[in-house]
Image 1 (cartoon, helix red, strand yellow):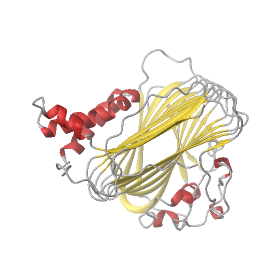
Image 2 (cartoon, rainbow, N blue to C red):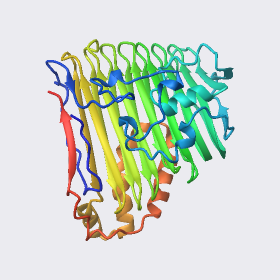
Image 3 (cartoon, rainbow, N blue to C red):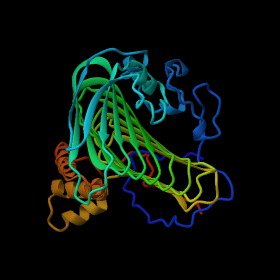
Image 4 (cartoon, helix red, strand yellow):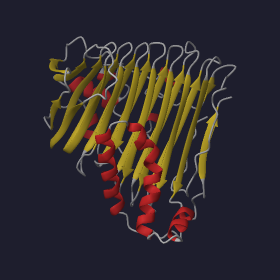
Length: 433
């Protein structure tokens, strides 16, 4: 069963779930899809991955992984190898962090999984040099980690590939912030490797100029006892498509995947996650929230979680929430959960998409708060719990400023005439028990 949330709906409220007792007697599948070859997959784990570009035909839009994506803007990044120099990467390392430029035959490349779609395969086939950021092995400090900054600056429209590796060595801890700005057409690979006992936070900010096109494959590998917080923030660009793939290969690994996006008129922001629980006693939490405003604003969120037969003791939960602020915007939300063993701690997912909550607005206005300020308060409240989880103060401050700028651009919608074909409320929550 695949759960797809309808779009442009009235406000939906998150319902508390207890998923601590979730079990299954056998395989539990929430959706399969045709593969690249057209054959129907029986497991998300069967989807093809390969370093060979020829293993991925140019998509037509009928494939499961491309059916929500407008392909025309991405065409230059899908046709074949790209050789542009449209981005400039600058790294400002925290104390002790090393930065290297390496050739594509460096043994540290390709350790965090393989490309899973055509855009990722083009990125892999096209780069000449890669940037490797290494957090050295050390005893974790109780002091807050200083931030390593990676600025990816678009300087033109030439189709370009980039490759970044972030390695957290055994027992290390740190924060790496990727900042994408300017005008670019970029297909990008970000490899994140967390060795045993590492504690790593990686934040990827998409603050592109309005015409930018960005496809990024984030491949994340966690070893034994490693902890990774992966944060994706998409605000700018004409089309942004981020595909984080998380592979838990060591016991007691823990990943928290957070996402925040704000789509304006004509903007397409797409996030497709895959969390692969392949070993026992690991934990994953996925929370993505988005707001949309303006004609043609579009967001897509797909969250796939696979609990393999070997992954006993898994504890996982994923959720996606969308707030539609104006007519003409659309949000697609598809959570998928696949369980191959009944010996798990818990598994569940939730998805909700809603229009602006007029009751909340009326309550605030009845207490003398002007409508514009009331709307801002509601949207701030929608994002507040997610922002509090980011854990990087300078990033949180910047996001609050960006949200304020987005809200300032919202014109007051006519809330008295909602689309007739739209259901009033859409809430989808499921706990396997």
